[in-house]
Image 1 (spheres, rainbow, N blue to C red):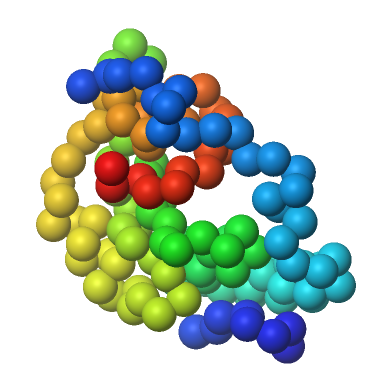
Image 2 (cartoon, one colour; image 1 turned 120 degrees about the vertical axis):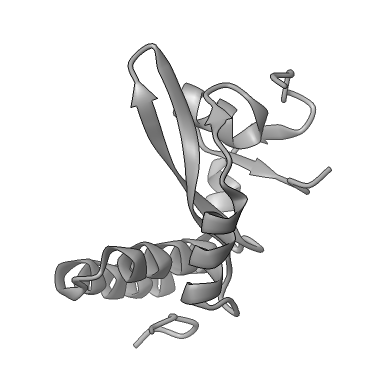
Amino acid sequence: MPKGYYQGSSTSLSGLVRPITASESDLHTQSEDMGLFMELVRDIATELDLDTLCYKILTNVNLLTCADRASLFLVEGTRDSRYLVPKLFDVSVESDLEVSIEKARSELCRIPLGVGIAGQVALSKEAVRTGDAYK
C-alpha cells in the first residue's frame, strides 16, 4: 500500500482563485502518485457504499494535491434552475465519514451555479486552487 494512502452573491473570483498549474500538480513523485492512483482504482471497483466511496476519493485527492480539505457538492434542479447541494463537507485525512456527512446534511443550503467559489467552479467546469477558501 502506498505511503500516506487512506483506507477506511456572485462576484468576480479572479483575485481569490487561479487555475491549477502543472508544477502544483507535480507535488509528489510519479511512482507515489501512480501507486496511490492504483489503490484508488481498486477501491472504486470494490466499494459498494456510495458515501464511503466518495469519502475515500476525496481523502485521496487531498493527499495527491496536498490540499487541507475538500467538499463534494452535487448539481441538482431543472435545466433552467440548477444549484449545488452539499454531499460531504470538510473531508481531510483526519476527518471522519459520518461527521462529514452530518455536516453536509446540517447545512441544508442550495448554492446557485456561478455563486461563490463552488458555484463558479461548477459553472465553469474548471478546477481551481485557493490559498484560503474562507477569506
